[in-house]
Image (cartoon, rainbow, N blue to C red; front, side, top):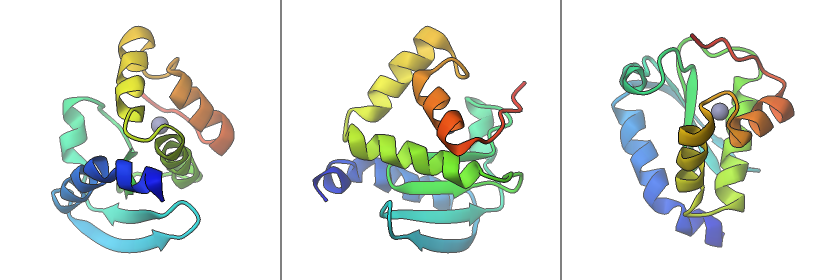
Length: 122
Ligand SMILES: [Zn+2]
């Protein structure tokens, strides 16, 4: 609960991002306390992660139109990371991203490993 509160600023950004992505369907994921939004387009992700199929911002999971099998499980690992490292997770994530890039980022490695989904970037 405390982590949910601490992550609230990110969750708010996630909700706004969701609104700008044309949500089609919405579901509450009880175990992770997250809101899953199936959206029409993650067009704004083109700015920093071309080809991204889904994204997690706080307790908001946005699934784009090209979502594949087990992508939701991958995003749920990111919610788990937000919960484990409330408030600081996005900062740690971006430090790791700058240092190691996307696929060698330890938070992505954990998510791909636990979810067993497939990276199709570039
Ligand atoms: Zn990821």
